[in-house]
Length: 404
Image 1: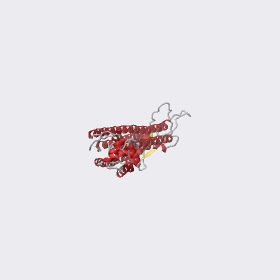
Image 2 (image 1 turned 45 degrees about the vertical axis):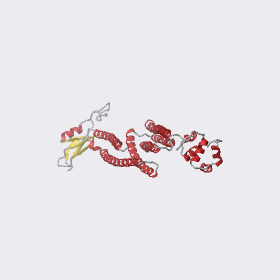
Image 3 (image 1 turned 90 degrees about the horizontal axis):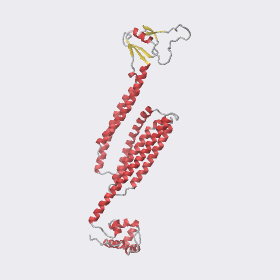
Image 4 (image 1 turned 180 degrees about the vertical axis):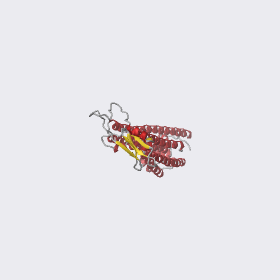
């Protein structure tokens, strides 16, 4: 193609029109203006409206810059300008993505402030339901801001190469922020299940909150997968062939790990529930194999702590009150021994009923049950840590093995 010397906009439009074999009427019809208007442009009695410059440039296959300059650029200049334009677009996309990531962090921070506010209401003022609704307010504000930030990010980048990947990154980051909102909402849900003017203690709150949060995030993940498939089918979330292969591979990996995690958590939950519902497993008892040691143990007075007076003190006179003599019998109803029950720490007594001998006699004291419940409390905390470790381990495995 022969490159024209530099001209005015009007002369350049006239040259382009004649080179494309168009009349002033044909050009005017395509621009929805009169042929007289086109004639004035070509005589330099006027210039096209700024909104028509991109349309005219597209009709004649030139750039807006060339049209405004009134000349075509050489192939080398066009390639250089195209490369600079591509770099500029990449820079603008990186800047827009950085701005979007910062705004998304702000949305996540608002949601975390809601969790802190809920904790303050619950632990400091014992207003658990107020804390729950205050937290919901922050979660909704954060989600609303995230929606605005998504719209701004998508509108900040024009139709250009790389926009689809930019849009996909925006959607993925938005999914994480909305997932955070769902998890925090489920975590604070136990606060709404108690009385208005009472708080939830830290142990039950974290235990129930983590269970609710894990369940809510699992449901959210399933819903997100369904939405993603719908978006891919409708062309909202575009992937090339390699991207589709990576998506399918990652989907199979997520499904496998989700099933494995569900099985592991189920086994852990069964074991945890069994140990928690059977605290007697951890009760340490005392066994006596002869009546003398049993009678001595039951008749002994437990040590007194502090200024608590002994129970045997007689305030009416010098004579000590008579203590009832109890009888211990075996399964056949025969008397094993007689004893006086002075040891008030004893919780229960059980005679062996599996053989002919009534021994050993099993005695459990109150402190044994107290220690057993302490062990159950430790098991609850350990189970909570195990649940978290299982979830974190599976997530780490996914990020290590996923395709990119």
